[in-house]
Length: 301
Image (cartoon, one colour):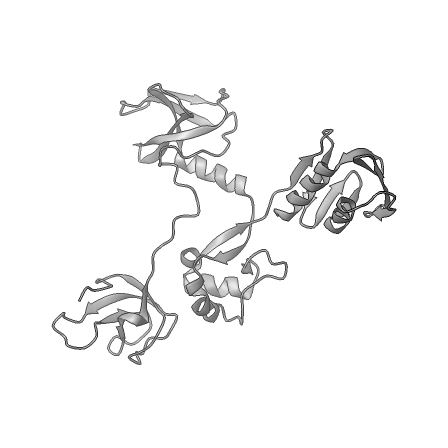
C-alpha cells in the first residue's frame, strides 16, 4: 500500500480516530512510520510541541499535509514575469547575459516603460533580476535587486487590511484556532481584519502565512466620462466635484425614463433626460455609457 506521508512531513491534525494525545488543529511533524508489514491501517507518530511523545499515533485520514502556499509576493526570477512600475532613479546595473559580473553600475536616468523578467543572477550574495522591455532580443540587460522589486510590489499593492482563507477545507480548524464562531469582517472585505482577536490567535498559532493570504486596501480609483471629466470611485458610489453620488442614485439615473424628475446625490442635484444624454447638476451631456461605466467601476471594488 502506498504511503501518503513520509518522515519529517509537516502535517495538520484534522481528526483523532486513534484517540491520540494530540488534538485537532495541532500542527506537527511525522517522527515515526509504522512498518509496511504491520497488518492494521498505516499509522504515523506525529510530534507536536508541548504534547505527549508516546500516545500520539494517527491514522492517515487524521492527517493533512501542510503545503506552504506560494509566496504572496511575485517570483520575479521566472522569465516573462511583468515587473512593478520601476520609478526613475531606481538603482540598477548593466550586464551581458553571458557575463559573470555586471560591467557597469548606474543609478536611474532611463525610461523603459513596462519591464519584464529575463531570469536572474546572483551577484555578491544578492539575487538580481535581469530585465528589459517585452520582445527585447539583445544580450545586455538591466539588473535590479530582487529585494527592490519586492518592495516596489508591496508599495503598489498598498496597505494590508486583513486576511482571507486560502483553502476552504481549513475553515473549521482555523476557526477553532481563531476562537471565533465564524469568519467575516463587518464590511465583508475579508475573513478577518488585522486588528482582531482572530488575527492575533491565528498568528500566534503559526499558520497565518500558510493558510491565509493578505487582503489589500484598494487604492482610490479615478474614472473619466466621455468628455474627460474625472470622478473618484469609492465602495458604494462616486465622489464628483464637491458631492457624493451613491450607486443607488446612478441606477435610478440609468433607469430614468423621459419626463422623469429626479433629485440625486448629497447635493440634491436635479437630473433631466435630454435626448440620449443626461444633465446631472452642472454636468451636461452625460451618456448612458458614462453611467454604466461608473456602476461597473463601483461594483468591481
